[in-house]
Length: 169
Image (cartoon, rainbow, N blue to C red; front, side, top):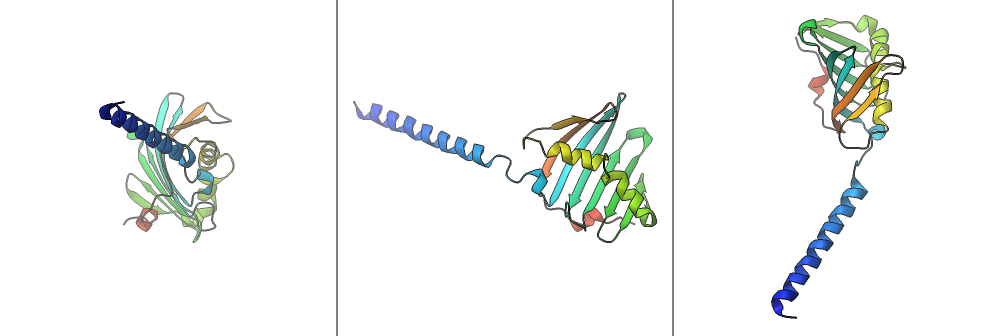
């Protein structure tokens, strides 16, 4: 075997080993932290009901803890844009309609249950994401309605600024 052929053979073997090691690393480390173990989450949802599409942007910190906080943006075009900021730690709730903020903390329990209670969107999203592969979109259909939810742009344990969970004046 001449030197050129030997170097070519060694190069091919090295490439195969590198690809195999990289592939094994990706397979063993795909997904990393699962949604069910996340302390913070950020994702978008496209909700389709009877042909009408609404876009949601969700952010949550201290997921599952007694001081969990949610930031929910609802983008519904001509029907308006809404933002909710809910903080279970201090029992505060704020709602903005097209950028105008209202303190709805006196109704915190109802506001929280509107989003996080059994059968509500947060819970449905979390149940669906518990079975998510860790890549791509996650889609599910509402159990009592013919509503389709497509969850995408999913970030597990992102660093979220505290200001995201505070209303603006």
